[in-house]
Image (tube, rainbow over all chains, first blue to last red; front, top):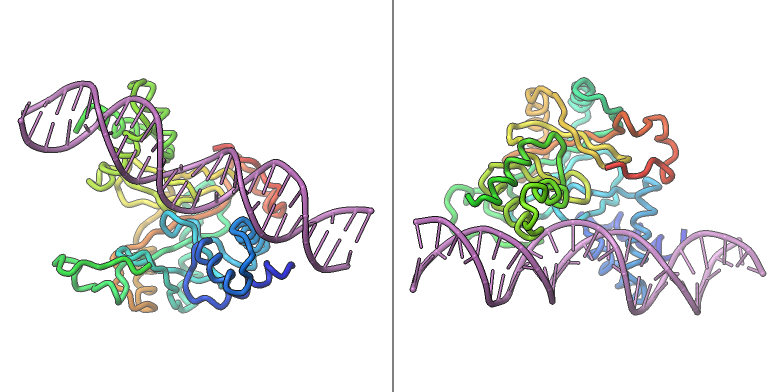
Length: 138
Length: 138
DNA sequence: GTCAATGCAAAAACTTTGCAACATT
DNA sequence: AATGTTGCAAAGTTTTTGCATTGAC
């Protein structure tokens, strides 16, 4: 665990957003101005392989990372691309996971659920009437 | 609907796999040898905007496309990246997503579910060997 | 010293775009 | 002629990699 890797992990744990590699780079650069983007990529890879962070390959085009490795779900804004956590009660999870096993020959190790919708900043009521139009706040 | 677009749509409907843009390009090229990759990308974009095909942004790093627009779920092999359909009743999933909606301030409009695991070809017992797993057979 | 990790830069991988030519109307 | 699409190539974006150097043991 090098200093760079430590700082990357800390910043990611601290961030409540779900930053892209580039955003992690910017965060970390405030503390380690000479760090390189390649190092950030390499360490994000190592950290997620170790299970210390989570890789969110599926949240849109660009990969995102999450310092929270507890099992939790995400919601993504269709307008601005922002990603937030969903607070869930543990109760329905087990029953749900149970229902998943049957439909495939794969050996299932996990699942990913992403809710999609519109974040508070992106004017949910404008879904039908395209008024001011949501802007990209990502 | 140009000839190129028609062929792209046909090949995608015909394919049981969930091909990447590049793979669509290869498929289509067998019938239209002079088609360009740019045209494939443009038409995949148009077709998914029209709802004639489905864009699988969340299935791994590289974007995939699905000629089946019916609501169904996917399972992705963590080892080789292959994507298959999952036979699954939507009911428990929708109920579960419903339960999650309470945990966010977003206005939820939909959800995406992807199972992850290991396909029959990819030796499920190798799960422990994290990095040295099977190579990409995609 | 050894060995892994780093910074840097170049390359790779994937996707989008500018543009002139080409259809179709 | 007007419109929209194509093939091609170039450029854009995101991610990975080669390599000499650095730093922790």
